Image 1: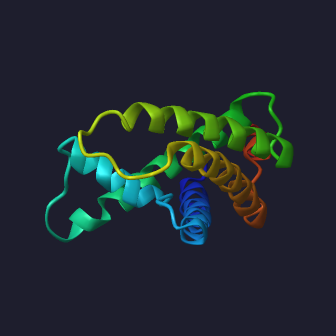
Image 2: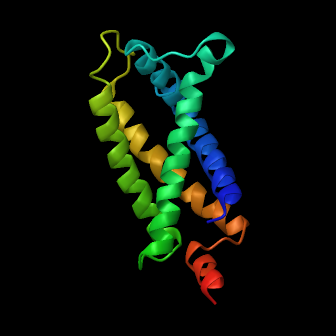
Length: 157
C-alpha cells in the first residue's frame, strides 16, 4: 500500500466530488454541500472543534471519510479478484453512493436542529457525487500508474 498515493487520490477525489456538489447546490439553489451538512450534524450532536478549526470540522470529517473510502477501494482491489479499472470504479461509486445515502439517512436523524435540505434531491446528488468520487480515484491511480493488484505482485516477486 502506497499511503502517499492513496492520500493524494483521496484528497483529489474528495475535492472533485465536493466541487460537483457545490456546483449542483448553486445551480439548483439547494443545500447539497457535504461539508456544510456535516458541520450541522456534528454541531447538532455536540461534536465541535475549538478555535479556528470550528468552521473546518465538516471539511476535516469529509476528507477523513474520503480517505476511508479510498483505503477500502484499494484494499478490495488488492486482496480480492476484483480487477482495478473503470468498471469496478463505477461499481464502487454506486455502492459508496448507497452507503452514503444510508449513512446520511441515519445520521440526519441525530440532531434536533437539522440542515434544511430536500433529502430526496440530496440523495440523488449524493449518489452521483460518489460515482464521480470513485472515478476520480481511478483517474488518480492511473495518473500515478498505481495498480493495487500489480503493486502487491511486485512485493511478492
